[in-house]
Structures are given as structure tokens and as C-alpha cells.
Image 1: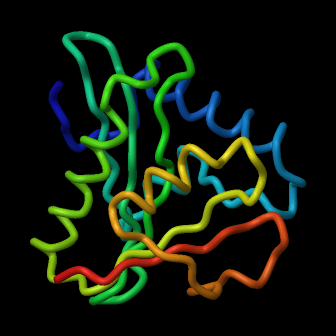
Image 2: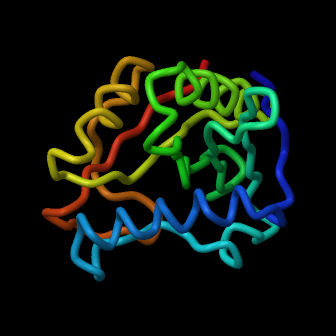
Length: 152
């Protein structure tokens, strides 16, 4: 599998991000959906990566700069039919390595509190993410779980 910075122009990524948004709105109340659309992901403070297995898109992840030492994980997604192949772990490891290279000392994320999000929460916990209070512009929300980790 190859990970690359993506320009968010291809049909494959448009379809994957639409699947992501559709699931978020099907699972969470609209006011609790914090997933970003294509335009929002093109912000200069966001770096977006995709992972490919030959010609197949098998996942994506983004790193949003909150300040010079704190980054947020956004848009972590693997296609429904291509899960359990290690793409999510590879992407998360890559993002953490890139955050270290950019001298971040902390990574944080917001995910859902519903059972649908349990696999994601377990993956993040396996990398050392711990529960935390809302960060950045987030507010306390029973539909959200906030996690963070320090980067050595």
C-alpha cells in the first residue's frame, strides 16, 4: 500500500468522502456532525492523505493544524467493503509520524459516542489516545467523544 498527499480532485476520493458524510449524518444528529466536506478539507491548515492498494483507494486521513504544537485528526475513513486490511492503522501511523516531523506535541480528535464508532475509538486507544475534554472550537456534546495523545 502507498500513502500519498492527495489534492482531493479524483472521483474515488469524492465518493469515499460522500460515503463518510452519509454515514455521519445517518448516525449522528446534524448538529453533532463535525466531518468536513471537500471544500473544507482544502483549507491551507489541512494536509490530506490517501492510501492506495495498486489502483484501489483504501482509505484517507487528514491533519488539521490547530496551533504550532497541536493538530487534529480529521476525515479518517476506509471504504465499507475494504475494511480490515490494515489501511487505517497504516494511515494513523503515517499521520503520527508526520505530526512528529512537524514538531507537534499533541494530537486530538473528535469521534462519535455511538456504537457505530466503537471500532474507531478502539483503534485510537490502541495508539495511545486517551479521553479528554473538548478542545479547539468544540463544546461538550453527548454525541461526541474527544481523545488526545502527547507526541514524544
